Image 1 (cartoon, rainbow, N blue to C red):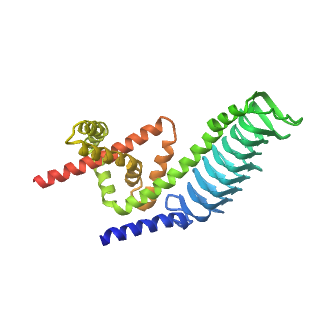
Image 2 (cartoon, one colour):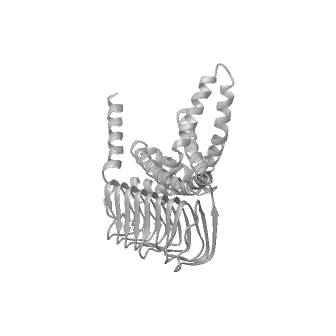
Image 3 (cartoon, rainbow, N blue to C red):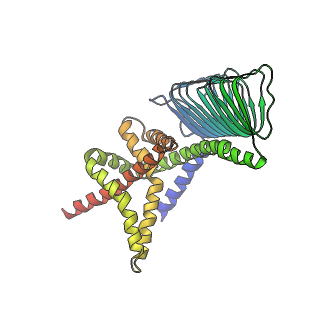
Length: 367
């Protein structure tokens, strides 16, 4: 009883630390990556490969990242930074100024502003008030009020209640606006092919939900689950470190058995549970089996990411490796079709380990 109390208290401390203070120091690890969660986070003047930040106030100023960056908080600010891949940002207020992003920019929040000399490949914005004054190769925005300026070297599409076009706007491709009232086209604006579609209030709400809110919801939900699953993975590392190592060893030494057990368990367990539930005597056993199966599915991605990352980064700190592995799998889950495959394979991996662990222990006792 005392051990359970200590364990519960320790888990509460871990979760509190994830919310209130830094998980890792603001220095890149041996792989050049940064991961932080806390009240105030700053990646200013720091060169690193990739980074993740979750907190109340996040500043990424004059930083250089060779990989992707993810940031979610109440206030997210980037200025004068350079990101070689993509940026994922979400928060109540998101400000991006004079930042170079060679990949795509996915940003969602209440007040979102991209200005100055900011450049990116494709930009996807959603928010209550959205302002864009940078340079991009493609543009999609949804929100209550959208202000579009800068240069779009390609097509642009806007879904909003109110749209304002700046005189400095340049769109080399098509500009499509879906709004309740057609915006005025200033004399200085240069647009290759412009089309406007008037929508009623009901249609506008549907469009905003289906386009703008959908983008924002997907980005914020994705960032939330990355943080939640990483925190869960750190707990797994602390409680079940030996099992995570053993699962990777099983995959290396018993690959065929793991694949067969994973596929068989993923398909066979729910069928067996349903058959048991059809009998009056064994129905409770079937219900317990089905409940255990669902719990395993919830932990599949965290377990797979924390375990497989040790095979990919054998010399890295196990907690940091787990955070990176889980984050990668959660990001892949956001991709249509591929995300479903990743989730299924991760669940199969956990089920395969559980089946093989029980089987190996039984063989050991019978000897």
